[in-house]
Length: 126
Image (cartoon, rainbow, N blue to C red; front, side):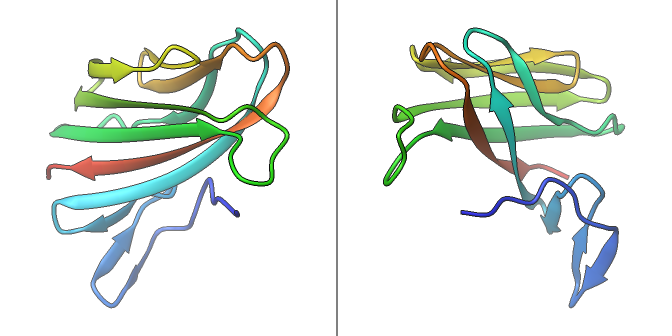
């Protein structure tokens, strides 16, 4: 699987893409990103934009999966962003956690080794 971490600003047939990879479709948007996740270390995989509007994001994160030697860990969370503030409103997983440091989205996994973590983030709001 290939993940993009950044695209250029451009409009394609009414679909606006923003730096950082967010693709906007009306009030919905999505982005994918990945990062190497050392064991027990919160690692920034994405930084939310500091914009003057309220947004809600659903974050789905995973490592491993089919054909991989990594453990099959998943986590998901809902994150509310209001300008320069962000907070997790729901989070669930024991093997991998999603956290925030300011507007930085961070993943932490507990496998005992370093693996690549992937996130898909869906934006809801305008």
